[in-house]
Length: 507
Image 1 (tube, rainbow, N blue to C red):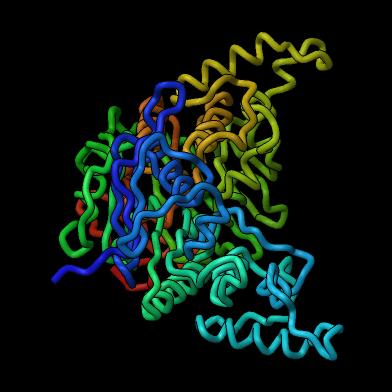
Image 2 (image 1 turned 135 degrees about the horizontal axis):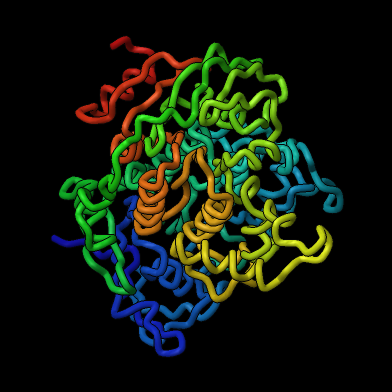
């Protein structure tokens, strides 16, 4: 006996200027399941979601809710059908309290028919938060003072209060890259909330590029590629390798490009001693053409290490040599001048000025070399440099004047890499270099890192993705409590063994 799906969409097709964003795509969602939607950038995920949200009108599509055909002509219709969308850019009012945000669009409880009953409002908010197991959030607290993760949980909780006069209670939650800006602890809270929603019989469409999360929390996965549905499978009948192959058309062995050059004998980066308020007696070497990984649990000090090497920690006591030359006590500008380049963990807040053009972001540290007499910027020279490094990183953009915020996550990261490449670095410091980018963009970034190491650049790469470290690095430094506790060769090392070292197990 088969059950009627909660929601299904068939033959979804959408063209933009003759180019297919969706091509006869299909998606079937069962009641009470967590269903992953995966695909590279440009695969059609966003277009499919926008059709369900009533934001984009399809050229062709058949949509069924509880077995009945429906039309979703606008966002109000999607809401009325019980569809809820949790985006990365959350629609909350920072100046209002948690309780006030929960009741936005709904009548506040009143006393004497006139005054807001704040006690009743906060009690109702507390009960709603408790239903999802997130009663650590104070309903009286201003939203602006919450972490991004807790703000997202408040947004989800708001949907549990019902749809008021404009529709029915939530049946389907569509979560678009919900953990992109969350810490590990915040992600765990979100996963518990998703499990609670599932236990209540609600359906979650989980849009993500993070395969480890999908394998852990989802029941089924549908993969799109080039606008078409490649496959829909239960998690039990698939694995990481197959998902990657479905998304990219490549096998997992092709995800990490092979090394094209040999590690040199020359010690390019020689850290003889590095100590700060957190870091303790750090010492290691990176040879020309070598890729050295840095592994560690959250808070182990991997980011602190890279920032100290880049001169961003004024408290650091350093004995660091580049090609045998003592770097002394330097700041980030001096480190940049000494041909060290840094790709930070948070590209949107630390690596880019999102409102500025690609060319501005690429050339910002190079303005003195692009200026006439130190005053007048040589625009043709700036354009030539941006175009050259843009081609090297395979940047996909309309033109170099396009604002950074309009780019995909992968192309934003390529802009940060392009700026580093323009410095012709001897040492490249990478902090989570592929965080928040899809599998296809990851491959292009890995290829770029390989190419730079083949030219003799010493690469130090911190990452929480252990498979990434094992696939890309020659050696791996393991950090525990802000000190290096082990240095291991990547060849033959297992992910389980590396994780054990991160937890402090001895070799």
